[in-house]
Length: 179
Image 1 (tube, rainbow, N blue to C red):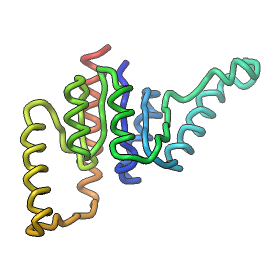
Image 2 (image 1 turned 90 degrees about the vertical axis):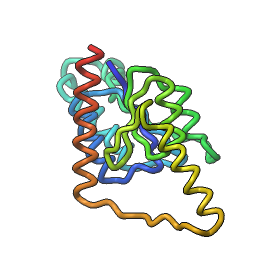
Image 3 (image 1 turned 135 degrees about the horizontal axis):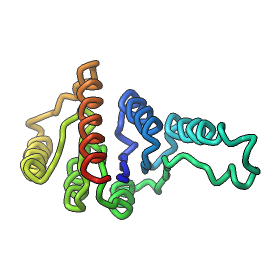
């Protein structure tokens, strides 16, 4: 089975909702990492655990029920540059899927053999990550010189749909290639 690794600090709530629904439906292992608590993830883990335990409430003892848990985990790391990224990279094992819009993190995960998509559904792999890193460096240089301010486009319905479709493709690919 594959695992999903999520840079939760930057994943918008609507994309998290799509992802969490899919993880619960598939009962898929996932690791969410952030430098603060993310309530919807914690609530989903509790609800998923309760749903997994429900059929066994009358059949198992308390200790046995406690062993049944959602495979979704959430870790809060200390605030600091790349602390969440470092934790994700240290704990990622292929096969897997990482969800982040952090290009340097995407590059590090790809080096570990992890598939990567961002919060808009763009897929990063060995064939395009170097170009994205170059673009990132180029834009950073412009910003430092005060020549370019990157407009932050909000998320719309199409972005959520693209993310959901990419997530479906990645799950399909991982399930069929890593049985």
